[in-house]
Length: 362
Ligand SMILES: Cc1ncc(COP(=O)(O)O)c(C=O)c1O
Image (cartoon, rainbow, N blue to C red):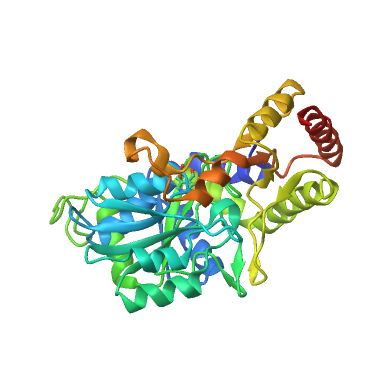
């Protein structure tokens, strides 16, 4: 369903890091990764972390978000977006996504701003950047921090600007199924130097950078290892090729299934998506998506359903009735196998099996 694209270059970097003895959270690959990632995302600062969830928590903690505060987030996202808010003791306020982007709806954000609101986290769902121009306008009017959860959108552009540069701070995940990966890893990008310095302090247990074993604040161990950074810097070197192949994979599905009952992901005209997952909506009743997934499973094609809206989960109130678009997408969405190493023959076979499985739904 998803498999990392790893080459001789990753192997070489990893061996080099291993043999150098720099296997922990200091070393040349960490500096190199932070520099190169920041340059690619057009920001001044990149703060590498041990995964994408703690990257989100780090931004919110560095911004001082805490108990009594509210953070507006889309209902349709991976649970980590909400969990990061909860880790701060703050309350996630769920709003619906827009049917044309599947990302947080700026009008609903505006309607949900209240006296306790401190931040908005937009999520670039399935590789499509949210409507940052509209969100920026709302956030600056109400003095709110705008965070982009770009875990799924490395390589995307909005109006020619790369994800990573579209909000006050952006977070990435390098989990094994992401566009580029180091197994487990993440980072935050920002051009706010003070925020970056605060994140670096908190990432390293709160230790004063000028004084060893002096901890003026309570921090976390959210550091990335040099081994992970070694893998990532190889992935960054190969990123354009990986992205190009993933884009071919997704466009092939879209072209070959254009006349089927599957509806492709809508892409706004200002957007160049990140080819993270081939995402489709299944037409039909509420059971059609699950029946399709089961039929495909029987044919040996592994798929992924869309996320369940976080507001529908037991930990977050089990009520997504206020977010009908998220609820509908969560029921109807399916992701087809997407990774760079899929061959044209693999794709042909998968497309044939999708067609065969769709025939059984009628
Ligand atoms: C939207 C979103 N946010 C956050 C995360 C969390 O990242 P990680 O798994 O690296 O902690 C992920 C992916 O896993 C994600 O898809």
